Image (tube, rainbow, N blue to C red):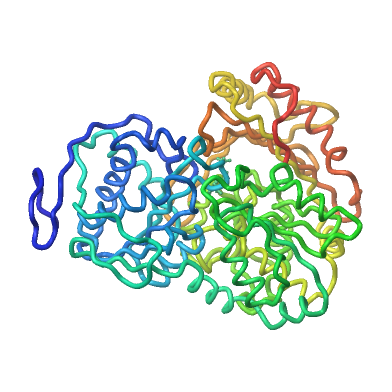
Length: 556
Ligand code: G16
């Protein structure tokens, strides 16, 4: 237990300063940690208040180990130095920090688990743009390696509103690019190779020999690291260990502003990759990952695989990789993710869980051994090997499956649809709209839910409508208001929800899904297949009236 300190005092070796502060009112963590513009984080005491609130709430035992790393974006190094000083002042005994301040989100999760750390601070705003005018973020992960659950993030928010002081060790900046261990006021700081433990974990899960043989046989792949954190991981694993030719990984050096691009692996921001994969001489397999390395984009030669379909195909074929040869315990997906994975779970006779958006909701299911593979429509897929989604893991599982099945991605997907049916899927995003309009749209929807079942809209019949609430089967905790679902006869759906990761105004997400059974129309153009649902969404929610927009900004 630490003693209350006043002013600058000596505690053994440590000079710890208690810095008076006043609360900020806007430090409520969203879907994935606290995300704000860099300028907000640069305000005096802003990052410190949040980090101290985390430490106050999680109450680590003296001498505990903390992992610290980030995606290399602007402001990363500054906050890492601060976090190290604060960890020393708050009684941690050891900090593991990625060299250069770099740790991908899944690598940080892996490190927490592999080294038995008490928790970790991950500095990232994920797929949001970086640079001095971009976004920054701080997320706390608990000892299972996963994002702090809601009861902890709620307590952190409460603490940020009451904080009056934070603890800071008086010490100079550390050389984050060095090697080995350093001491900060009695606390050990170990600079770790960001890639090594993670790459070793991947070698345990996948048949690297089979993937090497696939690549040696002339199979061509392209990986776009989007100037973000996965560059060093992809160079090491795909090129050095699996033998892909140099140049397979593009944009592979992390930069503070992601090369001026938006590190979101979707069809808008990874457009060049998409175009390369649609060309006549396309590689066999294309993939990309996001700012912090937890998202993935998968494109076969001539075919984009939606994240929801990717989850379903990976789940159906995972047993082909050594790490999953014993089969899956269950599959979990976030509510807006298409129901394609449900069909696989049913065929495999295993559980399927529908959670709210946010990887944190998968943690309990994974810990309880109820699910092995999880996925989200927002380009996240992962398994029980860590407690985060994992972009490169998804790429390697795909490669392992292709190495065994020896068929192109497009053929694998056609085969999948012919067996399970096809869930045509798209997400329409209306970004940076006025919060009042977005809130009014959601309130309007909630107000009409009761009257919707049985009604006819654009040729579709509403079977059910609700505001999704989730009861965690492991601890019975309830999360309400997680998005409005309109379910149609025949298995199609529209889901409306507001994003919890944006930093400007509100982002309305409209998730559209049309189910075609295995003997139905499996080869439609997605936009055409979903046109009736687009019209129904407008008719039910009045999107253009509430947002002032006639078109979405991004379709994924
Ligand atoms: C985060 C969460 C994901 C979530 C995604 C989108 O991803 O970890 O679970 O699906 O945001 O959330 P929203 O729809 O609320 O914007 P990331 O990659 O940004 O950490």
